[in-house]
Amino acid sequence: MPYVTEFDTIAAISTAAGSGGIGIVRISGERAIGIADSLFVPKKGCPLAERKSHTISYGNIVFENEVIDETLVSIMRAPNSYTCEDIVEINCHGGYASLSAVLDVVLKSGARIAEPGEFTKRAFLNGRIDLTQAEAVTDVINASTEESRRAAEARLEGKLSRRINHLREKLLEMTAHIEVSVDYPEHDDETMTRQTIKSGTLEVMEGIDRLIRSADTGRILREGINTVILGRPNVGKSSLLNSLLEEERAIVTDIPGTTRDILRESVNLDGIPLNLIDTAGIRDTSDTVEKMGVERSRKFAEDAELLLAVIDSSEELTDEDREILALTKNKKAIILLNKTDLSQKITQADMEGCGCAVIDISAKNETGLDTLAAEIRRMFMSGGINVGTEAVISSERNKSELFKARKSLENVIDTINGGMPEDFLTMDLSEAYTALGRITGDSVEDDIIDKIFSEFCLGK
Image (cartoon, rainbow, N blue to C red; front, side, top):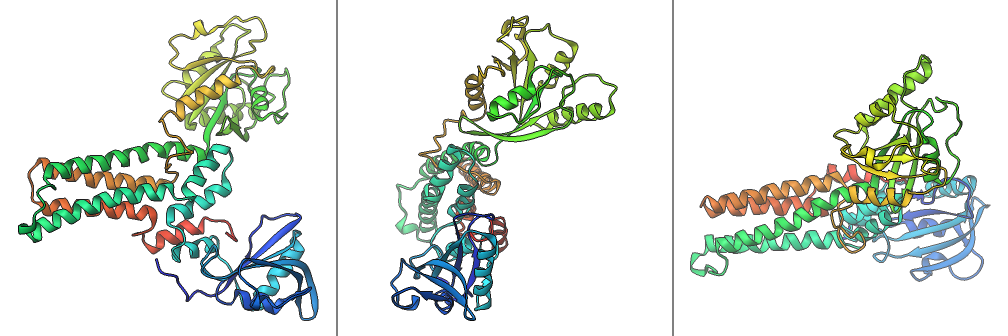
């Protein structure tokens, strides 16, 4: 994609809100260096306009004879920058007032405020990165575990792009051979038979299927697993939450019904992000507020991706326990026999036939949590996908395009098996090629591009 020169100059605060040692105001565009030069007074040396690319200068930002802030200013000249445009980054003191004051004078000097994701959008439009890498930028920023970071970094460095482009090249090669044989039969390549096309199509479909299988792993690493902790009062749900979080987040008492409302927390369990919901204990109660909490618990259990059903193994199974076990039917669920530090009256043998994994734990002593983590990994991450070495799909948009490409290739196989004209083959191969191109941004519509970048944070 060619370098685009008609963009105006944009600016935004690129560091997170709040106080810090350093904050950055980023400027990008044809006038970036000129605007910064009009504001920056170096302590020594030449003006910014005369300095080499990728250098840092120390001085003050001054506007109308007032020193706004003491700064370090770095310049990166086009096309060797993040956006492929001239970029200036003003490193200010990290307080809100100083950052806002510097941004304000930059805007007064001719820049406009950047839209969310506009710096990365310009990097895409200028051909520095493709759409999979652009989407990976926000995934890197939002990564909550080491595995999610590794998966996002792999996409950012182009592993997914290379995999998609490899599949497209195979489709393009087959399409070209078919078109030559149709338009110039005297030059027909006898090596490119229908059987060869079929084998090549099946090979591409296999590559697409592997990417589709990676989508569940990618979504989990990006968004987490919506996990509900379920159980009757006083079985140790809140203690389990505290153990997983490694902090006293939920109030733990011997009084039934202590947890009346829903507690939501996120936790990194062996590299897998869990969106935990600690619910009110399920039981019959006349307390109006507690009853509302119990009903909400049942509703959250219905919508959960994973249920952790906590049973007090030091007591006999109750009707309330059986009701909770019934909620695990036809759901991804794990039964946790808690309080194994006490004398057990319920064992794993008593849970045979429940259809779920059963794990002994002690939330109080934090035992059994490694086994729980291993079981969750087996349930949700068993597709054989190595996030550090393979391309992983993380967005529903990409997954949808893969299914569209696969459907077109299924039509190719049907056309070959049915002995239909070769024109049908090229049409479906081309549709698959285009669908894969929408993943990398090679053939994506402008409104989709705008939608993707609108979800970015401001200043990136």
